[in-house]
Image (cartoon, rainbow, N blue to C red):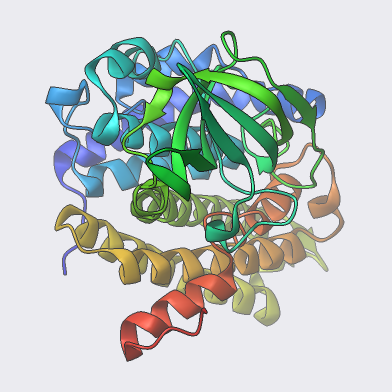
Length: 381
């Protein structure tokens, strides 16, 4: 396969990189220190198509192909993985809204998201539910013209700030006896509790625990049909894994570039440290991992474009996230003591690349998904 970017894609990549350097990079240190996210970037990012640009034009998107879309997410990862995460947790539920939303839901919720005027989260995981979404215990009981949602969600990216959320809940109604459904929860119309969860990674993504205690949600906020949450949610995971993979490649490339520049300029024993054999070994190993991860990620992008991608996205996500943290680790080693310094990019990249191996399915879960695809036998009960 030829994964070389076209001249148009390279031109867009250059525009994105200049935008990131001008508008995003100056904000990172302050945001990291305050654990805040600059939502004022969303309308500007929307102009590039980052807000639902992969959606068809009929749904308000730009019909961006997955190779171009993936390159764009790689640029996000190159500059700031918290930004990549926020765009991932925005676009995946937007895809759900586009595929399952009613015209009224799209007008009220999807349109502001595409314009960058609103933010969203997806709430699946719970204190006792992680890799097995089928075990969700949050419940939604139909009571006349509304559902009553009760339960807790944990590790929810943008849960601290999101205007709306797509919440997965076990549903009880005359037509549904405990199957999982999706609900649009508007924070203004259906208030719920939020608690910040501090993490060592992706510090500007508003990770939260959410408490739903008899929260009333209008019946018209059911997204899709009752009982189809698992199918819709699992379908969205391929896109999420693709975003993470390309973001990881971008972060790994950034770490490699920083380490290469440092190896050329840092003097020890009267010469650049890049002239030492062991430092060169690090640079070579980093380059091999970045190139391999990029190839696997673009292979998954091509598969997504063709509509068959579960195994390819799992492979890309597994390898790219593991490789990115290995590359960041070697880059930190090349930098020596300077790599530890808070506020220096390598310290942040080292932390944040560790954050890619768990969400959207851990490394172990990706391994089992790939094994099932290869052998036709599931190791997951």
